[in-house]
Length: 156
Image (cartoon, rainbow, N blue to C red; front, side):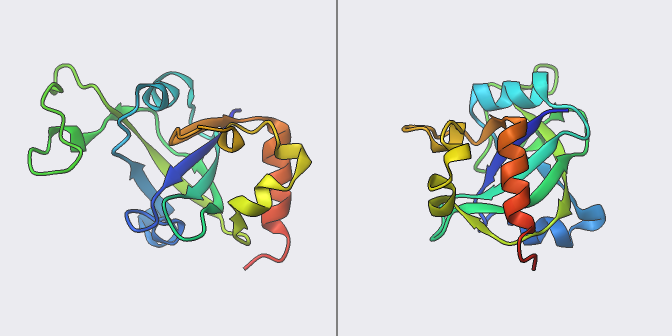
C-alpha cells in the first residue's frame, strides 16, 4: 500500500463535495502535469491512502482522508473542446491524461499547512519542500501516520 497527497482547489472539488457525492466517490480529473499523471498511471493502486489537500485557497491544508477507488482510465476532460482541460493533442485512441476515482474515507479536523510546517516529523515531506508545486505527491508511511493521528484529534 502506498500513500499520496492530492491537491484540489476547494472551489472546484472540496472534500465536502466528495463526502456528498454518490458512494462518496469522484473522478480525479484535470491533472496536466506529466509527473503527477505518471503517479496515477504507474504507481497508484486501488486502496492506496490519500491525504485530500485543499490548495489555492485562504487556508490551505489537509481536509480529509480518502483512498484510490479505481484503476487509471483516460480523463474525459481532455476531449471536451469547450472545457478548460481540453488537450487538442489527445485522442481517444491515444489519450494523454489519466483519471482515477477517489473515495472519501473519513473527515477529521482540518490540518493547515502552517501547522504542518511546524511538525518535525514532516520536514522531509514533498509538499513542504521549497518550490514544490505538484498536485500529487508521494507520502511516506511515517508522514501518513503522523498526519492521520493529527486529523483524528478532535474530529468534526
